[in-house]
Image (cartoon, rainbow, N blue to C red; front, side):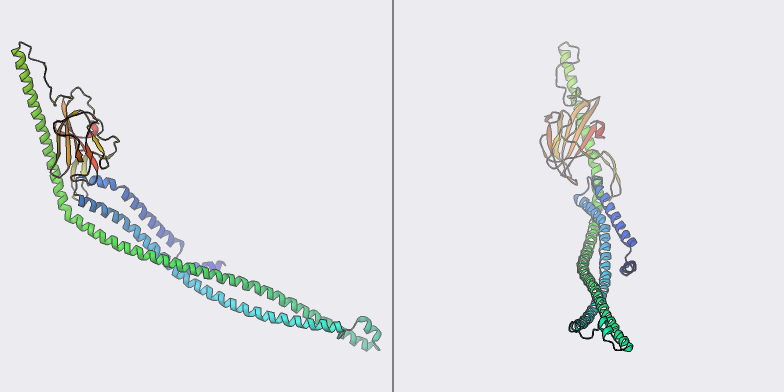
Length: 439
C-alpha cells in the first residue's frame, strides 16, 4: 500500500511544494489586491481637481493592475489542477485495467473451484450410496469372524484401511475446495468493489478536469480582456496627461485669483468702514460730540467680531476624506496645494455655514463648480471667510446674512471632481489656511 501511494505521487508529478507555491503566490497576489483597493480613497484624493475622465481612467487602471496578478495566479492553479487531473486519469485508467484483469482471473478461478467442489461432492455422494448398500465396506468384526486364514485377515484389513483413507482424502479435498472457493469469492467481491470505486473516481476526475479546463479558459479570457483594458486606460491617461497639467496650472491660477478677490473684498469693506467712521465723526462734531462711537451699522466686516473665534463643522456628520496641504499628482508628477479639507458628503447632503456672516459669492466658477463664500467678519483682529465648493445647488444668494449652521447649499460633484463631496476652505485676511486650525 505504501509503495502504491508513493508510485501514485510520482505518477501525478505534482508534490506538496508545487501546490504550496501556487497557493502562496495566489495568497500574496490577493493580499496586494486588497491593499491596492483599500488605498484607492487616498488615490482618489490625490486626483482631486483632476479631469473626471482621467481620474476614472487612473482608478480603473489601478483596479485592473490589482486584478491581473490574481487572475494569473488563478490561471496557474487551474492549469495545475488540469494537469493533475490528466495525470490522475492515466493512473486511474491503468489501475482500472489491472483491476478488471484481476477480476477476470479470479472469476475463472471461482468457476474452476466450483467444478472441483462439485466433483468432490459427487465422489462423496457415491461413497455414501455404496456405504448405504453395504458395498466396499468391511467391518472389523466381519474380518475377524470371516477370515479363513491369517493371510486372508491381513488382506481384508488392508482393503478396509485403504477405503477409509480414500474417504478421508476425498473429504479433505472437499473442505479445501470449499475454503478456496470462499476465499476467491471474497477476493472477487473486493476486486469488484475496487473496480466500482475506481470507476467512480474516474467519473469524478472527468468532472474535475472539465471544471479545471473551464476555469483555465475563463481566466485566460479574463486576462486577455484585462490586458486590452489596461492598454486602453494607459492610452487615455497618456492622452489626458497634458489636460491634467493644464488643469493644475489653472487651479493654481484660480486659487490666486480668488485670494486676490477676497483681499479686494476686505479692502473695499475696510474702506467702507473707514468712510462710515469718518461720516460718524463728522456728524458727531457737527452735533458737538466727541467724535467717537455713535450709532451706525458696523457692516459685515465687523458684524461677527463678538462671536466665537471657532468655526463649526460644515456637515452634520463630519468625516474627513482628505486634508489640507501639499499633494503630489500621480500623473502630472507635480506638487500642488490642496487648499482645503474634503468632507464626505453624499450627493444632496445639506451643507452648513460654519459661522454667522454674509454671503459674498453664490456662483458657478470657470471650471463649472458651484461655490459659496461667506464673510464672517473680524475675528481676533483678522478677517475670516469660508468657502464651500462642488455644490449641486445653492440655498443662499450674494449679500444674504446667514446664521451659524444654516443650510447654504447641497453637496454635489460639480466642476473638476471625482465624486460627490464637500471641499471646505478657510481664508484669513484673504489667504488660505488649514481649516482644521479654525474648526
